Amino acid sequence: MPKPPAPPYRHYRQALAVSMAVIVPLGLGIKFYQGPGQSWLNDTFGGVPYEIFFVLLAAYIWPAVSPGRIAIAVCLATCGLEFLQLWQPAWLQAIRGTLPGRLVLGNTFSWTDFPYYFIGSGLGWLGLRGLKRRTLRTY
View 1: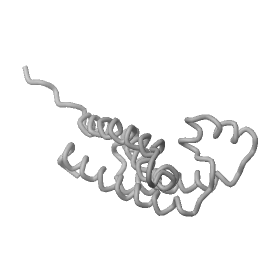
View 2: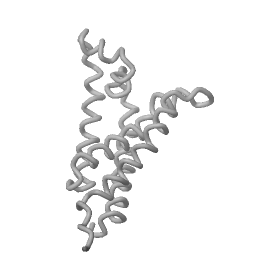
View 3: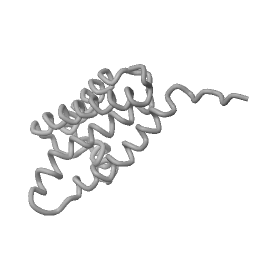
């Protein structure tokens, strides 16, 4: 009896899960690095793996959506979160006071974060395209 075919996005999602398992420790390592260039790595460059992670996560949730649309949506969302840092009501500050809140929402607005969001989204887009090509063979 022949084996039934795998669901269409199974291999793609597996590749996305492995990629997220790599980018999360890398991003946390950058965020909590102590040494030369610490301020730049922790506060600015950390936006690159942050973007890549959310691009991968969005693709995992919505695998049929094109990599370009995902990268643009994630970039717009994270730019929106950056502007949200200018708004500081007590309840939002309480969320930002936690480690998960600080990692996801941030706590200080900085114009210098935006280029790294664009770089991270671009790298995420390139990575998604490659993963789709290798795992789906139809993209």
